[in-house]
Image (cartoon, rainbow, N blue to C red; front, side, top):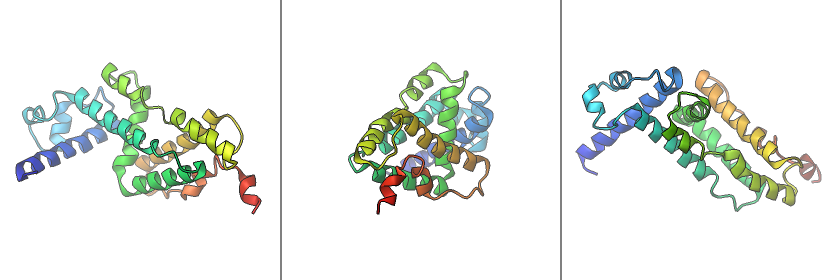
Length: 197
């Protein structure tokens, strides 16, 4: 990548970051191109060299969220409890390291619930169903004896909702101390399997 391409990519990243910030604080409908352009110190005209409109920017952010979700729900071949420990450690580390990750949890939640979300974005958001993707891992963990009995979808929802809630609280309170990853896993862990040893 040459210097010009690198500079253009850096500007695109700035637009993504500032767009994300504005979308989660003002909402999609209230966020204008001029708001984003002002934040990244560019003209409205220059903004159009990167994105046709705010909907295209919003769509790209939600697509990033979908891809991230697909990545964390990919490698489920390991023992179930190890998988949940791994994603808990990874996501809490990312939330701690980068406000972008925590803000993406907020954006994805807003995009799924808001009446202002454009239909093109809703189509992508509707593809994100982390809890359903985790059901098979929960069921396998129940068979392995490491995950507590109960409705697998309910357990997956409890686990992922807790993780999402932590991320959203972190956006509102940057000083929030994050829990130990094992605390999240304990929501679904079958305790008897530990006490046997």
